[in-house]
Length: 110
Image (cartoon, rainbow, N blue to C red):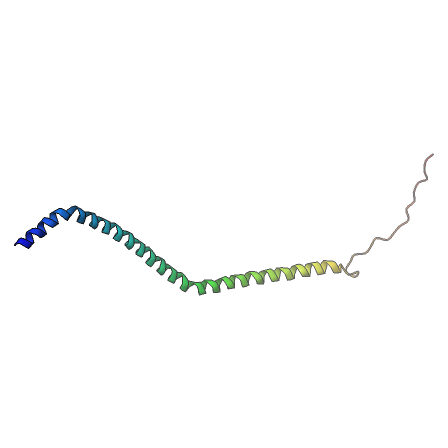
């Protein structure tokens, strides 16, 4: 029974050291655990976003194509309007032009 008595005595002496080591281990364990949780969450978020990128890219190109088509139609309409305005009206469709008439002016007063 001599050995167990020495173990009990050493345990009584070393108890504060064991408590400190236990607390340090808990603090380190909590820090590592929270870092691991954040890293795992980041990885799962990354995988989710990575899978959604092709669909988002496809929809972005569809939107760009729609805007480019509308801009092209507007540019063609503007070009047509400018060309129509530059050609001017035909003489046949224009109304009768006023004819010059001789006006009699009064003689100047002296």
